Amino acid sequence: MRWIHAAGRGLLVAVVLLTGYVASGVPADGARGEARGPLTLATAGDLTGYLGPLLEGWNRTHPDEPVTLVELPDSADETHEQMATDLRSATGRFDVLNIDVAWTSEFAAAGWIAPLERDRFPLDSFLPPVVDTATYQGKLYAVPYVTNAGMLLYRKDILDREGVRPPRTWAELERQASTLAPKYGLDGYAGQFLPYEGLTVNAVEAVHSAGGTILEGEGERVTVNSAAAREGIGFLARGVRDGWIAQEALTYKEEESRRAFQDGRLLFLRNWPYAYVGASGPDSKVAGKIGAVSLPGRDGPGTSVLGGSNLAVGAHARHPDSAADLIAYLTSERVQRQVLTKGALPPVRAALYQDPELIRRFPYLGTLRASVLTAAPRPKSPHYDQVSLVVQAVLHDAMAGRQTPAAAVRRLDRELAAVADRD
Image (cartoon, rainbow, N blue to C red; front, side, top):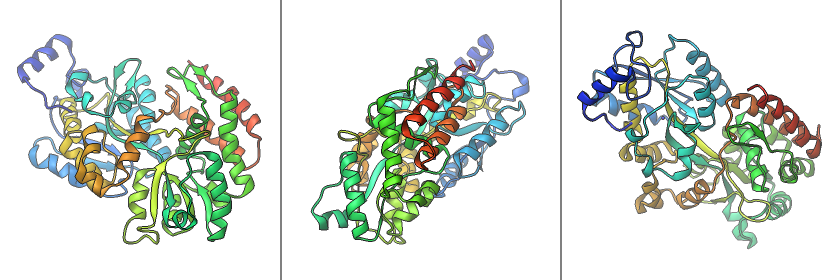
């Protein structure tokens, strides 16, 4: 939508002298500065304002290694561009980067972030699927910070009044969205359908929920030309054509779709868990009237895309050992609890999903945990930005009725193959 404190400094110094590398994997040359010192953490816009106070905790206990927070735009695409521009420069200002999980492979392949030592971080304490998002070609290049999985938010009051259960399949979702929503003056269903990273997420979820894939391996195999992909894209395109997905939804990002649901204009919404928290707040017109379930799929529960972010150390970080320790701090269980309670962001620490106090406060945690454990990663690729742009453009054309689902899949196959051939 951010690792273990170094033990045995003498041993660390010996390793540096022998290998020329600090523990973070960054070359320990004089031009990069000392291993310890002040840091800059770059992140996309902090919508809930929780991160600043977390970093104040670090700064109080590390007065010689203070961290400065740099907030980039809310848009994932704009954040990606600004991070990439900084990382291309050997004199960039970003030491630690809170990156979208889908960018890890791209940034690692470009040499923009440094490999990390696995034994510095308690990876066994994390939900298992999140660790894979932090690796590229078998090496750890980041540490999971927050995870995420899409869920289906729904108007529980309306479904209860109608005596129906929340949908588990696309057919049930389509039927309820097209019949019940008009009865109550609502739009049926929305996701994030503006051409940006959120649309890529919705596209991947639709394809996987029909049993297909888009890319496999590290992005070298294009697998989108399938009946499953045609069915998944066809499901979304049909929704717009038949009216249970409103035309307005083609302009929605996360916040626009959240506000539509929170203002009482939607029966169903695909969004991240933070939208449930917002829709349960005092400013929401639907507070106390909502529920959350796993995304529906073709034949039963569907597949969410694994969202969230990873923390990486820039290849030209000024103080890489301090950077690694900051990552350890932000992924500690105590701070991860605050990531959830203060930021409404899903933590990566598995134990927190079993905490009775947290479950009472965040009743969707069980659904979220199940969604994360069965989620699919976005396609790994060293050219992920180009992959995402292709998927966005093609799916938006299909949903806007400018291309049939079959033609859209053929176009995806052709254009993604061209991206893969760049290697």
